[in-house]
Image (tube, rainbow, N blue to C red):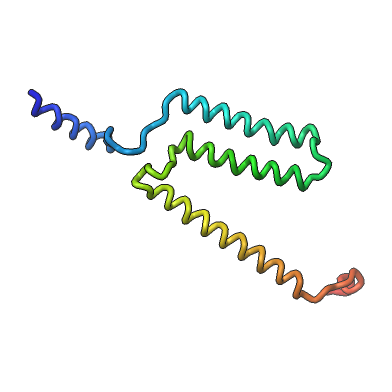
Length: 133
């Protein structure tokens, strides 16, 4: 009877396409609620910063909103996507790091090209723009 139990579990895993012995554990109700509470707080703070006009400088407000957004991305990845260095043998974290590097290269390269195009283009006065065909 005990020899049939592993065969049944293997058939169950093959049928459903997953195993119960994987390293990346699913979150508990408590961890999901903690992630939800953090997400709500990290959404409410930028909303309050913008709507209440807490800072006189829009640039300071924008930087804080983006920083809180980055923190919220990390909260979602940890609490809801269960990303950590141990999950999937570290490959999910490696893929995330690779993606962030590629995005940083693409963004910095685009900003660099646009800056140099802006500084190296011939300046045009409004009168010259009016005479353009």
